[in-house]
Length: 101
Image (cartoon, rainbow, N blue to C red; front, top):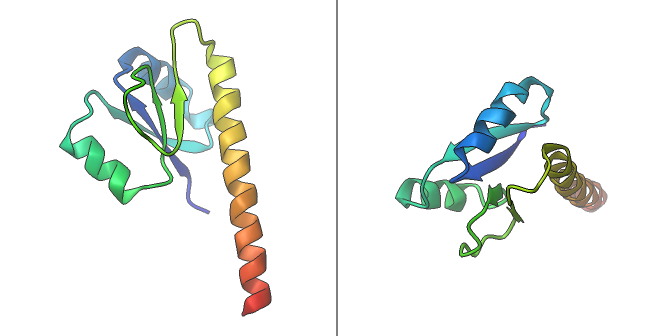
């Protein structure tokens, strides 16, 4: 199974912290410093990506609003909850697909 992509948008310090523990993470970590064409292309090509940002203005499908009061442990819990929901949905789709085949 491929690792899930998590984008850190405009939060360079958070990205640095998470890269220090990336061996313990069960997802790919991608950093974007701006909501620019490159970022929008990445999101378009990866519609299931989870975006973490302190900027509320984006209209993203999967989004965690980050503020500086947020503890890293709580953030990682939210990411894992999101990934668990996604994996359960994927498992349901895969099992129903097997029944149809």
